[in-house]
Amino acid sequence: MRKIIIAPSILGCDQGQLAMEALKLQNAGADMIHLDVMDGVFVPVLTVGADIAACIARKVDIPVDAHLMVDKPAALIDSFAAAGCRYITVHVEVTSHLDRLLQRIRESGAGAGVAINPATPIDFLQWVAPAVDLVLIMTVNPGYGGQKHLEYVHSKIPAIRRILDDSGGEKALISIDGGVTDSNAGRLISLGVDILVSGSFITGADDPAEAIQRLRKVSMISLDGE
Image 1: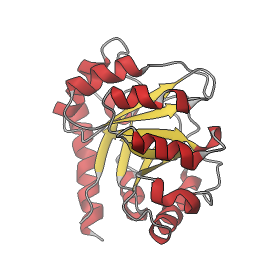
Image 2: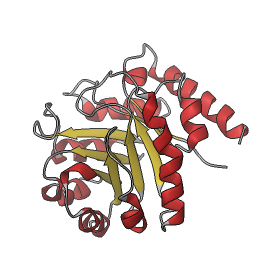
Image 3: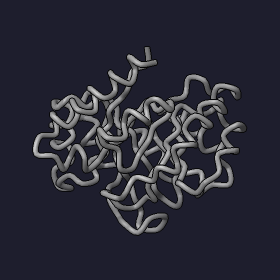
Image 4: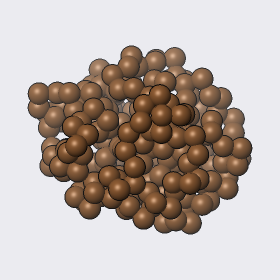
């Protein structure tokens, strides 16, 4: 049976206490920490760098995925790998040399992730599938938390799974990010999602542990139905 990974995004947390916020989420039952790294160029917002990522990775025992929403990810790979990030995820939209970038991430010791915006075609995946450890499907346009979940992106999930399985990426995980809640998590899992990235549903809840458990319950029900 597949294991569903619940990965809170800490974009909406107290930016001055991110390491402690990540630890609280680990203690609340999170399986992974999703760290949104924004440069103010690829997306309008400016967030954290590798030093903050290192503080978080030292504080928690669960993996950290550094989602690089940046214009020049190649310049940041080594520093985020050295910070202890288990995965480094880059956007296909910013590079003409995706295979080289993914190979470099793996050479750094991290798992190689590729993120896809809602309007981005997925055909490119067949050419890089063997070099991919994680595919992050955006169900919002990147840059801000709390956006409305775009259901029309759902059709990409099984299509991506087929491409990965047919092209040498059968071990790669599929992650989904953007407006994930307990009301749509079951559908996402049934389509093939392995990692639920959830921001405001968890971090904006009065009880983040209870929110994580609600996602966990929906996950178990969906997996039992497979």
